[in-house]
Length: 154
Length: 325
Ligand code: SF4
Ligand code: SF4
Ligand code: SF4
Image (cartoon, rainbow over all chains, first blue to last red):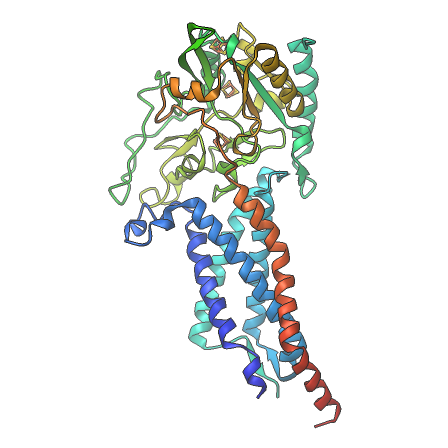
């Protein structure tokens, strides 16, 4: 019955929803939703509110970090007895680490007492976006290939 | 109150700030507490006579930074995207524009029963935690260690976000210049945003901002922020006046002292596009600061939840493993 407790379906759905939310609120940090009429669609006006999308992006990051903590510990405690990480999981982990890492630096930048040099600020801002775009692309490929995170140990 | 000589004050503080500016570029040593080295300016509204010498000085020393747009502008899609063109109206001086980073606002108020017109130099406030820089998607707008918020004209795409999130709506757009022209000019970007950069290049050399240097009435003072705040309150106490900027938007590096409450000033000035208000402003980035704390706890909370959920199962698995099943 171990498949029941790891991986957990609910967590997976929640994770995918948060990822979706992070993508749109992340892209919403660029002034594109208003320009391209997306924020004009009834119910989507909030996408053009930079403070609101920023707020949601932060909440999403908090939830995502909680999911990461849960899954890492869950895997170490139980999951790895029966499952091992796939190759695509390693690629995902590397990219997610890069996104989270640059994201953490962006959060630090936004704190009142922290100032980064102009070059580093730009690197962090742009690489966060680029890592996310690579991640989305790679995830789409994995979706087509139908490779998940875990596979049964032989 | 002891009057600090403007020259000597400037020389020492600016030399210190210049040295910091030069040495502060390395990574990650550049991660520094911002406060101690931040320079702020104090604008003593009482002293300003509205001669606009500061406005002219700003235009003169910063002329080389002003946009020289290529025309005709590339067509932009969709059609709702409007070009912002101030290049034929460079002389407009009664509001902020890409060519006027400082203008004089006036307010007719009653002081001690007497009607008076106050003139007030207005420009970017150089927030201590500037939302324009925090929320810029490209890192084009950024805060410098010496308390300046600057938009890099070579990187800015002119998306106007900095203006939307700025509590005073300071940055102004000029279409037809900048990086977007080399990327997808019809589909993304719309020029470059311009605003006061507090003469960052002069400060780097230990020189004061032009508007401060050219003012015949010594309206502005520049120095370390803590000293400027003290000075602002000393002046306010002396004249029974009011301070603006100490806490606005979480604190700015531009402080004003006024003989009348800022509410009164705010009612008396002409406001609107390019003409900032004097309202009380809450810290725009407070939400981010609070949520940042929750971000530290989140992974731990997730891990604890996992331990609670899986601990028993983990034990039983290892037990069965132990039995060599
Ligand atoms: S130069 Fe000085 S007195 Fe003249 S308008 Fe500017 S701040 Fe006021
Ligand atoms: S006043 Fe506006 S433009 Fe100036 S630093 Fe603050 S947020 Fe940025
Ligand atoms: S500090 Fe420099 S850029 Fe800013 S208003 Fe004064 S002269 Fe202009």
